[in-house]
Length: 358
Image (cartoon, rainbow, N blue to C red; front, side):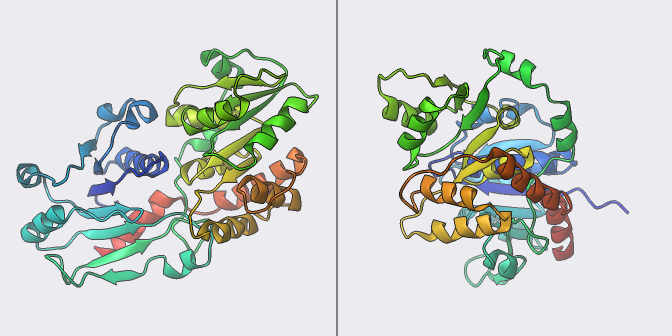
């Protein structure tokens, strides 16, 4: 028997990066592709112009402005949703909660979609209830949903046709479409914040004998590279890319022999790409990201050189970056990807989870 199609309200607050919106857009798009109705509430939609230029044309998916407050006439016109999702600790607008509580007999399934982590708490807390004790929704329940890398978590976002699209990808054609020459060279992508070891890494790349091209993403990565290099012109070939759609960012990862990624969304895409990668985790002032990075490297079963590169790249250790060992790193990533292929992806798991709570 087929599962009923549901209406979803997904709330996303953009802080200072693109990852939260990127994850929420992927989730919304995949739910809509399965026939569900999705309203994605976002307080800052500017990044969708380049991340998802077709955002306004997708059937079953509406992007709505998360104004403060949401006006009463907007709330009154909305059909009630079956599922509420507050992403990454953003709290659903109180006036939205009040309107929902006043007009429904059966509460929606209320999901608190958490950040991705390989730490053990993700398994322990995945699926736990959080009773609502105050306000108009008192007596309702929120449910913690933890994405993750193991079968006891909520899985990772992955489109059903991803392996087929990757197998059919033509690297040379994509490079030409970006205005890049197709040459015999090593290609590396750089999507980062401001890694402490960036200057050391650029100096190393300028000295290697292998012809190398660094494909630098727009935004903070390009600004960081330009600050380090200044007016210097060395032997390293650098291409500064425009902002890429989510699809073209996948293509970039598939094109390169080594990818530098940051945050959550691009980490998952790098895993699916199956190429060696280095992750710059979002830095936290209390140092909590150190344990998060170590837990991920442990799950990845990263070789010693890859662990060392990550720790220096993220400023946890000092000293020289280790030499690249791309064959060993690639084998590690592909073994991890193979483990993930054997697990259900996030949307399938989430739909089943919601069905058990309705």
